[in-house]
Length: 215
Image: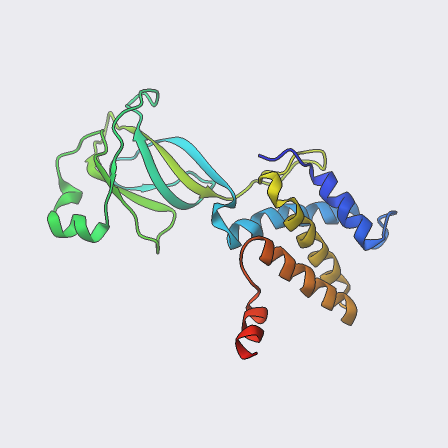
């Protein structure tokens, strides 16, 4: 979590917008853009918000991330059945390798200790463990995953993302603010701030990429 508040981001955006009385752009609206900006940043750059949690496994091989999870990264270690006993680090495997070496691995003898795990990029919120988890006495693991930031409750609340994303979020707020107006110059400003937002996240606007490709 960062230390910069939503209010600081809004203040910087208000200064650029030259709307100190919040007539054209109410602060509540800009605050909503800050929340949207954090989520959109994680869509563009999934590892902008990464969590590590102890997860109680379910019976069988297929497991799901916690509700806030967006994309699986890795299993760090077993944590015992009590969730407080650090243990063996499971080995990452390709699902195809597990299928080839043991086509019946989904129905193997169950064990609460995870020896191997696998995941499919096309199913980002799920992963698989081997051997299968038992119906009772299941294990717990430390899991690392990309997450979706929750909404901030107030302007005074620090942002969920790291402070390094402050400038990107300012550009995002300005992008949304100018986009609201719909006038030609404001649309140009919106496009420029969106491009800055994406550039700071390490990517490029699709239209910019196409333009460079045609040059």
